[in-house]
Image (cartoon, rainbow, N blue to C red; front, side, top):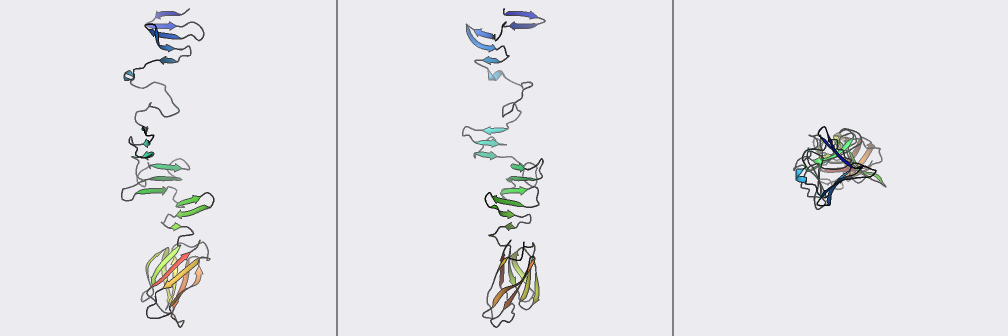
Length: 259
């Protein structure tokens, strides 16, 4: 038998029997109920009256049990993180700048913390997008699944691939030997008239590299710039006139491809 009783200022509604519910009606129409398992259901809940937090409430997904907006999904199914107005399918805004803050826009980590992770973000409008390897040892590598690494950006700014020059130099051999411009060149050595050595800032993997040399004939017709002795950290080259005599030239170019 169901009962209603009051004791110590408590009102108890008891639906007696297995799987019996407590029902609330108005004018004979059910508006709400409490099941025997404790579940509350209602045809209408006035959301304007719901304030504060629900104690002991937990969730395994995204919900509104928070004190700030976590993620925004608008009516166009665009997702915003740290922004309530996403303008792309996924917009991440408000994150700190890489290099100065600990909160990049995107971080892919191999372990906890910032070490051993790749971070993506925007530093300033002038510098544009920033990609950073927090480990820092090997730079950033770009891989293709079937062929492995295809391009590497080293920590000193060199781009390495089979299609990028490992060394290039524009050399003036007249007077004081001068490197006009170049890449991966630490210094030049003057071995005598028309005889030079180009020293690499970073060694190549072996001596099987492919050098290409060129010059611009000045006073001597038939000038020829040719590679000579090779080492992993340097290469010798000579410039000669049409008679085979060494001759200094002001416009000599060396390009090297290899591993």
